[in-house]
Image 1 (spheres, helix red, strand yellow):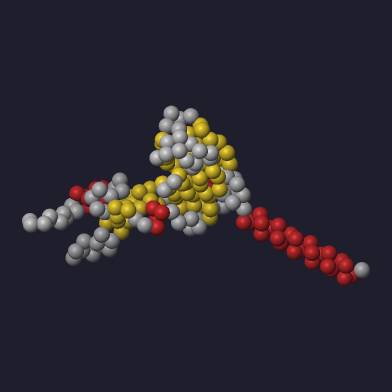
Image 2 (cartoon, rainbow, N blue to C red):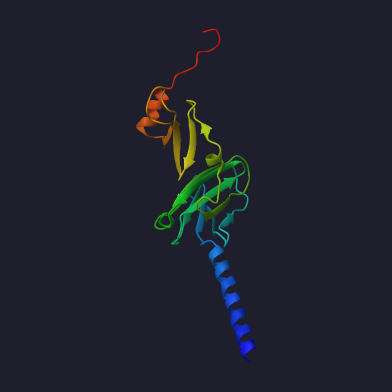
Length: 187
């Protein structure tokens, strides 16, 4: 009788451990709303237990994807994709998704669906974060926490190292205005 009781308790503990692992691995559900340029909702739904969502096929145009929900924990990473275009943010506190939520804009070049994922911070590597692009003035840019950043290279003979600054800052505007231009051939 004692061995039956012990094996039952052991089985119960293993079962409860597995249930807690499954619950810990699931992502909280967020409400997802996709609106067209006129502000009309074309998709409403929720993220699944893996943090994913997908719309049906949408017509070409610009859309706003809004996420709402009272979730705990975090920080979180969020990514929205449509074809080759993607928009993402990392290290978002759970509070960002409450009151008003978080919104991202995405443009569809052709008919396609919009997909997205909510994951623990650092789990999603967005293309923008993986490979910095260059702006019109030749400075490297990247998106971080939903903001565009510009890389300011170190000044020759200066004491400041290269650094990322917000693209809309005075420092970024000064760096773009003072960027030396390379002379063309024969000059």
